[in-house]
Length: 441
Figure 1 (cartoon, helix red, strand yellow):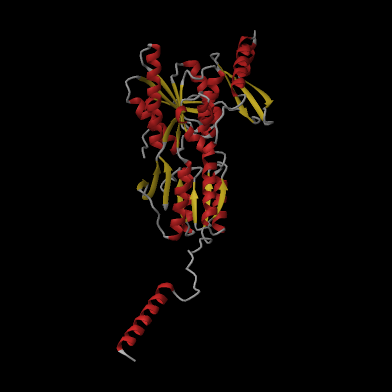
Figure 2: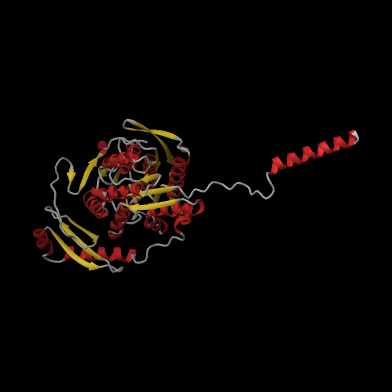
């Protein structure tokens, strides 16, 4: 065998060896990506009645199907005791991570400790449990939402005053949720801080509403319109905003008072599209859903997640991601139609408002009606709504003759009256001017 033949054979062997190491053994399939079917996530939401939470569920469910992740959903129905039972069930099901939107921030710390002791990762969503050792926190920028509310309201009021030639001295009503709701607190404080810096604002009144109930907010609006000039109404969530819009429509004042809400839920978005509402702050629930999903999966698989800041929560520094919010006016309604589809004004809404207004005027003008109602204090009238659900109309007459009327879904079991001590006004704990603390994020 010649040297040339040996050299050629050697090159052939080296080439064959290189091909074997490069491609593997013949018939061997490429290694598949590891399956994530062992990734089990629990999500405990304060209530599934909120449009934002329904959007969060929709987007997380879409991703679980694509990425083969199991999600167990729990609806606390705004009941702290039920949420604790839900957490116990998730622990029993051996989920690896829990996304937790607490009903009560004060009681939430106990839930977080229970989850952590079970060696389960926990991510707070929107509402921050006080002094709790979370593995992560994801929320929209609540303070910025309030600031955008205040700036938009201020600009709108200035335009209106220029059109009417009146000297600016604006009165603003802020409808706040429950006194212990930190999200509502931050939004209200953000708006209040912007408004109080303006020399054109005379009074900013912040009214709290127990459990964030919209019927209480409607009564607040009704009373405020009777006793003082109101130039703008800001609400810290969609239900409170719709209560204000309902009362304004009932009194024929839609379009005359600036209204700004937070949440961009479907009803508020419909009112915005119809020109009955000035603006909504969109908290971007789609992004909340995606980042919560990513955080839970990453914590399970890697032990950490892609946070972008840290927030101090009592004795703990929590990795966090704060989602930007956006101001949406009627001209940008297409941004919300990406979520809700084509937005049409609710049928029958305007007609119902006119009927309620006419009914109230007729009752006030009836001879002898006022004396009878003054003695009774309040009157209930039950009716069946168009959707078949029972509605109860409550008519309240104060000692000084002021009349308030509010319609409540369902049947009323009892009506309680509380004295106005220490600035608290009945069900709504009213706070004026600088009575609210800070709470910036």
